[in-house]
Length: 105
Image 1 (cartoon, rainbow, N blue to C red):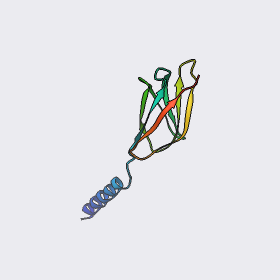
Image 2 (cartoon, rainbow, N blue to C red; image 1 turned 90 degrees about the horizontal axis):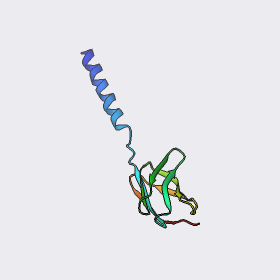
Image 3 (cartoon, helix red, strand yellow; image 1 turned 30 degrees about the vertical axis):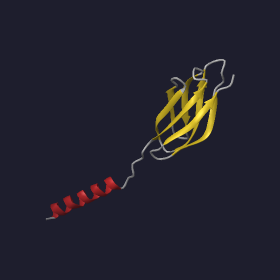
Image 4 (cartoon, one colour; image 1 turned 135 degrees about the horizontal axis):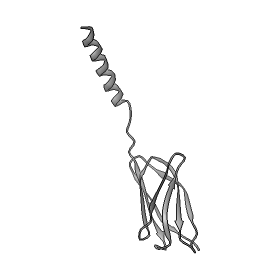
């Protein structure tokens, strides 16, 4: 009887542990770079994460972004200059569109 009680207690504790955590649903950050052939890579930087993707045909989408606030950095090809956009907020499981980012020479 004592073994059955311990087994039941272990099952209850294991079940409670499975439901104790909320899963984090990652979002994404997407945007457009103009001129389309002037950039190489897009970076998303937060206090705990750094992500990057290549820019193709002036478009980018950074997946697997945890909820939080990011700084987006566009790595440009010369003679264009790198540029950044601060305060980009990614919500839980939602795509965030930063719009068009224009590069200057």
